[in-house]
Image 1 (cartoon, rainbow, N blue to C red):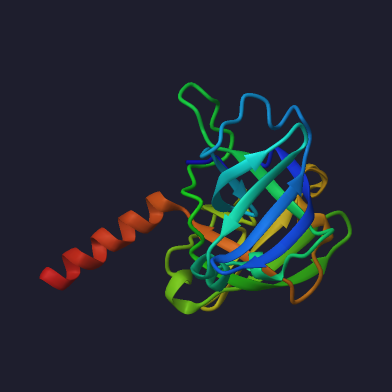
Image 2 (image 1 turned 90 degrees about the vertical axis):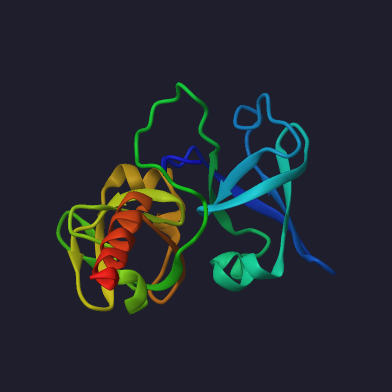
Amino acid sequence: MFTGIVQEIGLVSHKEETDAGITLEINTSSRFLKDLNIGASIAVNGVCLTVINFSKNKVSFDVIPETLRVTNLKFISKGSEVNLERSLKFGDEVGGHILSGHVSCTGYSNLIYKEEEVELLIECPEEWVKYIFLKGYVAINGASLTVAKKTDNSFSVFLIPETLNATNLSKISDKDLLNVEVDQTTYAAVKALEFRNEEN
């Protein structure tokens, strides 16, 4: 589990196709990798991946075809910046909201620049929009954000300077594909209500 508070921006140093998908190698700081173990979970752009190898300032993952199919990891390449977060430990502060690291859907970005703020609008499949509520939580590329606006097929958030500085969202352009994970609590509540309505 994760909190949606991006801890570091990593740099993809190697991407290699394999019979089982791809292998990714990401450069990061030794501080981020301190006390890491093989088999640990790290969220990469909000996608929970398992560590297969690491050194002082590099960490490697295998990414299977299904993960590539449903996330934006298939589009990253050498030199791409990715959001990184270590898995949550008991006793850690939850600064964002609880995330599973399982991407709900992907959506295309549309940036709207205003005088002192940046609005990020994301096109979202209708079957997932119903789990997104105004002032509720959503994760974009693994970053926990608050929903500001919503339509039948899109939603938007406002990006404050701190978010832009601490994540790779400062690097996105219009029509970039972003990973979206809906709030699991909201998802469970809506599913329960739907099940109750089907019974009645």
